[in-house]
Image (tube, rainbow, N blue to C red):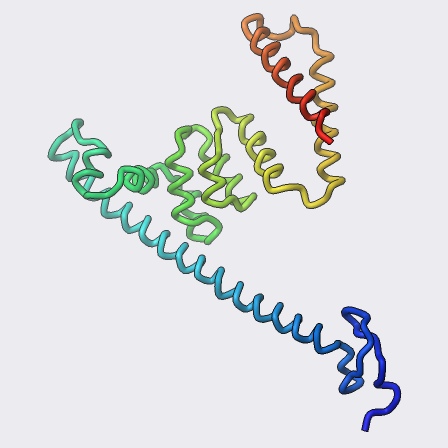
Length: 235
């Protein structure tokens, strides 16, 4: 038989009063059901993202196997057709999309240190192939570091536009903004730092800039001014 102390107790989760079945059960039936649904969803999410891991392994294995086979085929093709042999012909002869051939064969540009990252499971073969297949080869090491440190997705790698070393930090900042700052105050400080840096550059005497670049700077500042005006007009 329940004692009076068990009656009309507030639920620990929703504060609604109810009659618990025991001293230890201070959560109402409604919250218990909600907890069960949450736990069930959590288990489903674990299974769901486990499928992603399976697909990643399949994709990595396929990329590596394709690279090995295509490399051998390329060597044979060069012996037969010499300089006339191209990746386009290799793709046509092997009946594989050119994008797949280009991405897989780009692995030939990977360095020993980059292969070590793959071996240590810090970087997937597929992502390495994507990085190596980017148009700009000069900053491959920097891009690899960014992908590993910031844990970029394959989609984010595709969006990278790096034509000079300064673009690495620009792209990192762009991706951070797209992802969103974890705290509003962090967003404020970053925004304010950008404004302060801009003010310092505006103090610079224009004669200090290359004469042929002054029109470019003026044009870009004009575009920036319009964007700032538009931003200030937002609520």
